[in-house]
Amino acid sequence: MVVTGIHEVQEVAVAEKWAIRGEYMESCNCEVLCLCLLGARDGRGSALARPTDGHCNAPMLFVIHDGYYGQVRLNGTKVGLAIHTPAAMGLGDWTFALYLDGERDA
Figure 1 (tube, rainbow, N blue to C red):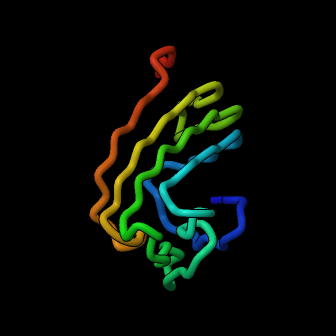
Figure 2 (cartoon, rainbow, N blue to C red; figure 1 turned 120 degrees about the vertical axis):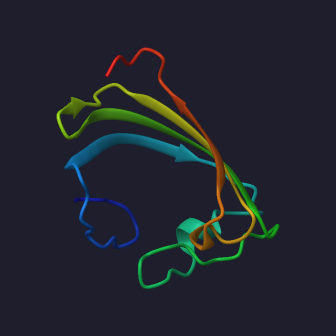
């Protein structure tokens, strides 16, 4: 698994091989910058920084230019994710809505 970004990610075993390359955008309710992206991490890489309002509300948008999951090609897929976490993202207990591109027929 290859992940690019500002944080190291540990390799984990997955049922299917996958890779994506594309664009990503997110915004959150923190006062300045997303502390989950820039703050402390645990040994697994999970975000531990406390959001400035104590909880996190964040929309995330992905456009996959090139990618696959197993034998399924993901090129051109657009994904939206709206999340709420009651504390630091890495502590879990997420509530989320996932929006998948209606033009995909995979």
